[in-house]
Length: 430
Image (cartoon, rainbow, N blue to C red; front, side):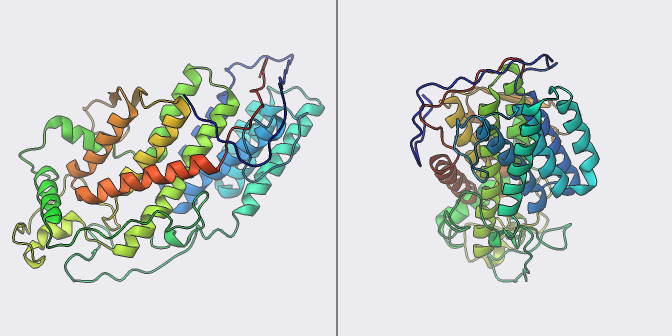
């Protein structure tokens, strides 16, 4: 059963039913306004920076929090984050769409036209009355609140990394000239108390049995010319290359539309996933640049210097996929997969979530869709994918997943909790 978290002041409301009846019937079900804005902000961020900076990664949670706070200013089903006022007479579509529009137009001014077009579409479904005007004001104020709160968060911090030649130390892998994410540990998180709140201990010593096990596993299964990796394992590697940043919201958008999920619930879920993704990157890159552990690409080509008799060098070894330009330990993909999965399990109240979607990262001619009977099964394949790509050592993957689970539980226990005694508003013609 889905847990409710009770924090802050107890609001004594025995029953609150907010009925809205409008003359104009929308063409789409309830939460389509939430879904379409999520789709636009993610596609825009992917176009702008491919989520390779925190500029794109911050846009999604800020927009989703503005939408969430705007709706809960009308009916306070969940605790708000930045905008905490109450405006019960506002129209929810106007409030949600205005909040989303203002955040996106501010963060991506070059894409303001597409934001204006989507906003106009949704405002045409809202009667021109006082509720609509109040909704616009609520949306504007909610967007302003989150943008001002996060103005000096350090998301654009830069840094410098000077690679070393010592065994175990990260070196930039081809074809890249410089690493990414150096300044991310200097960013203020959205939920965590600090970037290093969930920082793990160091990676295994190069002379250890654990390191030798990890080394030989990825050397065999992650090689471009692997003789042991199956076709399905190769497919897993490519399928999960589409990050949870994109994949989880895509899955949720389809689920929300197909199951007519209440817009308040949908807005909260999108916000939680985006917060977890943002904090996950800050958390994992804090650890990456604390330990600066080398990638399999470098380790396998230079094994003669690692001091471990159970590892053998292969100067021509190539990974199945091109290694991303940042240190190995811990793995970013697994921390985002595991953290997002905890958010989904909280929403569904179970791990028995059928996770199925089409990924755009698979090679042409291979199946775009994979399905899992539970979200935990999907996380296991997500972890293994980084072995099959040749990207990560096993320990860094497992540590990343554990960080993700701890981080997500902290988020769920401290933010956007269900308020006691407040019912979901009944929406007619929403």
